[in-house]
Length: 590
Image 1: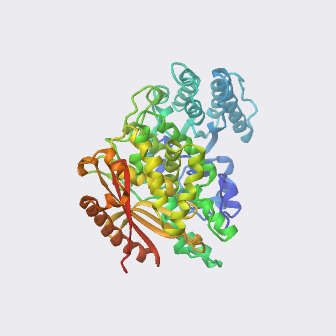
Image 2: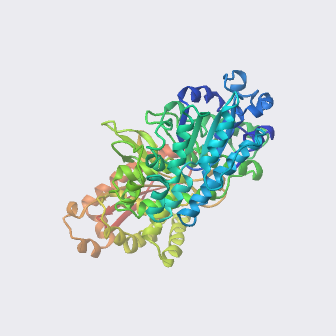
Image 3: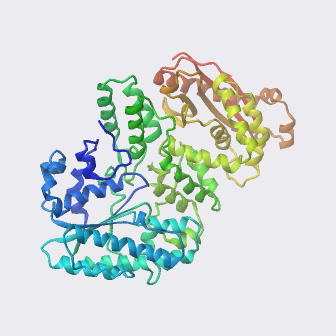
């Protein structure tokens, strides 16, 4: 079995014998959904391979290859009448250079579309297409004249329609640049007006557009208001991405070829790191990120072990999206709330369309920022609240690592901090001793948090302090709010199955919180108290006991789930944003 990591050429994938998870059964549904479709998914989620599959299915020039490419797939056994009935042209806006001034960006867009038109003409042996170097819309008109002379019509595939425009926007370029491309008679808007007109009897029959967010979509609405959005429809939830059953089947097949690893352990690891995406507002099966899954499976096949870094660096640039949100007013608060795994982020509705004016100028409320994080793929649907409002949460551990990295960089940016944190964390990993870490939290971390304008002064901030300092996904399956025994453990650090040859401990921490008002103490009084004096106070003892009871209950469930023999349990109580009191808890034999 060969895994097509980074490969989006459908023909090469099928003819080369690469693994392909069949999604051709959705072609009839796509045809029934409309003639001009818009499909949005996060980066590296398989959109380009989907377009390549459609290109090979509909291209009249590839009719002789139909049986070889599709005969063994679902659609090959029951093809639609439209297969191999179109001339196909593809635009890939990720190839449009977004550097330079507006004129240079416009020139790059003209060049890309003209190049695509010339490639389309050459593919079908058309030599009478007139290319206008400075006017790709005119070139398109020339191509459509030739198409109308033929019996078939054109199918236009547009990949990453928003890529270069978003690059202009997110890179902090002048708003005027973006507006010049999309407002008034801006070139990108003019291009989509031409696409709309072409579908009105000028030779263009179908359009399929992919992208990452609806930002550009909103700004070009008056130019292209005929596209049907299918990205939130339940029927297309898994059009891209893998289901758990599909991943489990692949792991079992790989294990049959001889493996030193356990398929069950590998599935548990992949579930923790890569699963969790849901793109339908009405619910649906959670999906595995396809790029990350193939990255993991290829490493497992070629090296016989898990990749050391669970986050593929090709997806690490998503950190920039979180940095963008974090610098907005109250953006940090949204990241903090997202890390509260049990509650998540509750919004009135997902924003389906918002323009650059919203992104750059409007008040950035929580629904707006959470919607952006959904489209970026670092939040996902998790259900609905008691009033039917959507709940968004972080899909998996890889996405969580991006949040943790960003908050740690914001709050503890110095060289000394970055040198100290790993040493303190390793003391916990190896010895189960929280004392040095707690001392650092009290001296360095809590003063930072207390000076920020957060509406949370409870156990969430204390938990996030430990989460950001202890997070190490190279060593642990580290999950906040793990669902166990009809409840949620606050923070569990379970050593990855491939790292159990080393000496790291399995850990579980339960958090509680008492405000200064609860204790009838001032901040100064709390700071001047010894840890022993604080721990002796009845209210703190009660909270420690409550946390200890939960740690024992959840710990017993985790021991059974993972077969653990030395799980270390801790009860932790935050005292205002001033101090932390903790104690080790004796586990209960399950």
